Image 1 (tube, helix red, strand yellow):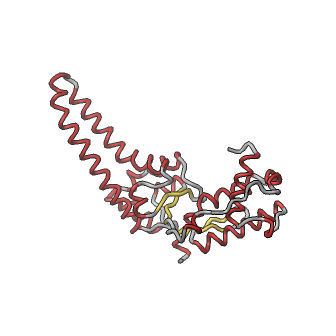
Image 2 (cartoon, rainbow, N blue to C red):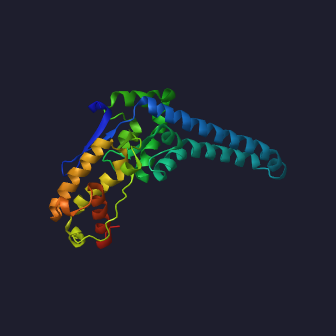
Image 3 (cartoon, rainbow, N blue to C red):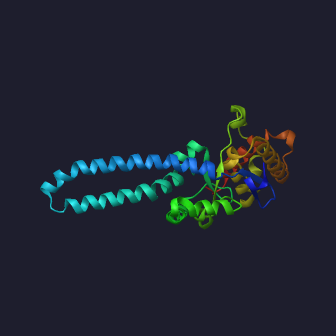
Amino acid sequence: MDPSEKLTIETPEQIALEFPLAGLGSRALALLYDSLIQFIAALVIFIAMALIKPDLSAHWAAANNWVIALEVFGAFCLYWGYFTLFEAFWNGQTPGKRHAKIRVISDSGRPITVFEAIARNFLRVVDSLGGYFVGCVAIAVDKRNRRLGDMVAGTVVVHEVERQSEQYWYSAEQTGTPPWGQVVTTLTMAEFQLIETFLSRRLDLPLERRQQAAQEIAARIGARLNVAAPGRPSDETFLEEVARLFRDNTRYR
């Protein structure tokens, strides 16, 4: 993969996590899909309002004003709230992004937050000027393929990686409570967050890079906890267990 087509995040422990960046084509496909959904929803709202307006006007003098207000509010929710709510509460994806197999993440590799979703979509009205000409130019010239909203919010759009196999996607190992469980509490918050970052974003990593990152992080954490490789499960299962035990034995929630 060309270095210009991926996001490489260097953790404080100097372990690189790589995410394939989404380009204009996949983002345009997602936008087209979302715009179709928005158009259908707007059409349904318009027809519904047109049907109820005559009856309301016959019994309520201010009905026309309220119907217009509801139509404006509905248009605002569809244009701005649609993207914001889906991205904030649907793991960085809208229906269009899910269809195009892309998602929004923070530029640190963490899942997008509500405030980041609000910020990136607040500037959508600017990015959409000229039929999204402004946003397309920004994506074309930015090395991380970001539009203006992404630059302000500190977010990027990345491709999801296709499943390689169920064994690749999910851990089937069960370890119970390991003998080294108590020493997990000696980890620092930065070390724990490194593990959490990897576990939360590993599904977006290419298989080879995912395995390499898991091995590097597991080796560092194993050395930190004095747990040799023969005494621990597979790399990802080991990291899952460490994260679970850290949460169970500390006040971190």
